[in-house]
Length: 261
Image (cartoon, rainbow, N blue to C red; front, top):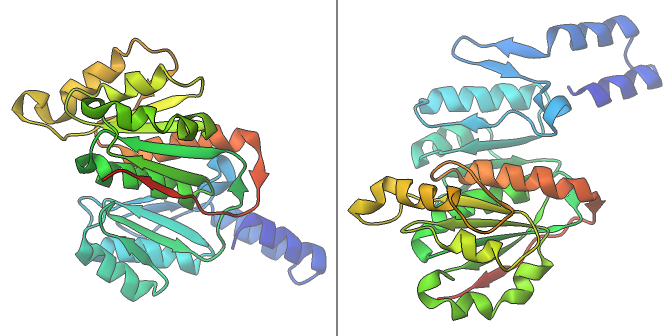
């Protein structure tokens, strides 16, 4: 049960002050043996604790999700989840939805209010889409309208230049690219909005699993480009949300898909 509901019940007389104090005192976190769940994360950061599923067993991930739902957490995001983890989570929480390419599990029973601005997620190539989708879906989960502009890398720069209207309409831009990672610099030179660069591990041997793209993005000659870790789509989506929400809230709308083959 979240703090707002507790206060409303106290106001209406459905809960005593003593009962409310007990909820608040004993439920900021809970140790379930293999995890200590932080129930007040949303109060501090605006988002409930996110379940990072890599290296967790299906039973552990499902147990955390079940515990969060039983304690009033309405919206849950689980990242880096393979299919077998999703199957276990869905058995515990039937409302769970799986996005296989992004390896994300989403549970939404009371979606976050929509932010005013738009977030644009662009990729250098189709191979960067799993990381980009992790970013896009994370941002959408948190209440943002997200547009996608995929496969517009520098090998065919005209594909990007033909979509300058999409760049201009975005409040925040996420650019996911592997190989030499040049797309983030190009986008940074075409917009006056913040660009979050995500190096991906896409590329041949000398790309060193994304290190080449990481270093290129860190050395971007364009101003206003920030960089997250290799393949960290979740981090990029969350950061874009924290920037975009500064503009306030709007009606709840979904984004549009803008693609190139």
